[in-house]
Image (tube, rainbow over all chains, first blue to last red; front, top):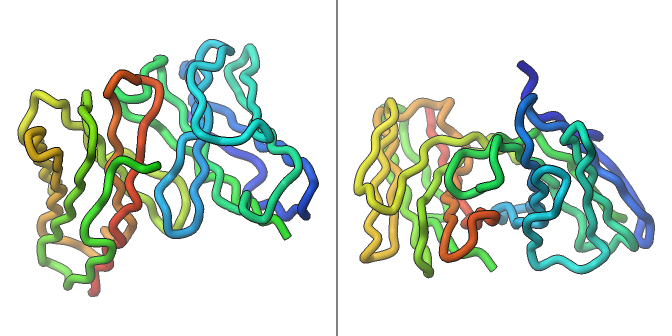
Length: 115
Length: 112
């Protein structure tokens, strides 16, 4: 079975632009969560979606938004990009809504560079 | 903010030696997980220990949890060059089951 897939792998944007990152969870997993990882830091929680509904949101500005589709894939959108948005964006899937009581399966991430 | 804090930030050892990494956290938890990350790519789950457990083993990994001290340790025995990676602890709970909070990680280098 395929693991969590993310696209694109790398992306270069300029300040002020908009970006869309995509994630396909493991087959049968209904929960998708997004994390931002700045170089040298641990991942920071951005969003969780379960059954197409937002279940949790981290401390990120409204420029960050996400959605989950009927097939449980997900998109993360970031508007008005800032230099500080440069990071590795990780998607993780899990079978249930609880992120804390079971392991997460991570994709390889999208490396976003904002120039 | 990140709840878990790993110690040390970096660790360099020789193959065959044991590696111990520590994690401290601030609030009450339901469980604690350890993840591994190679070269800034995706994280891989290693082990989950629940708040009512004190020790757990998985292959060459041994995890302990001391909820009174709000700390956990990850021991990798008989390390190999392939164990070179960053290791993160992640905590969940404290009233929230939708958010997993990661520490800053320990960079482990195992020299052949």
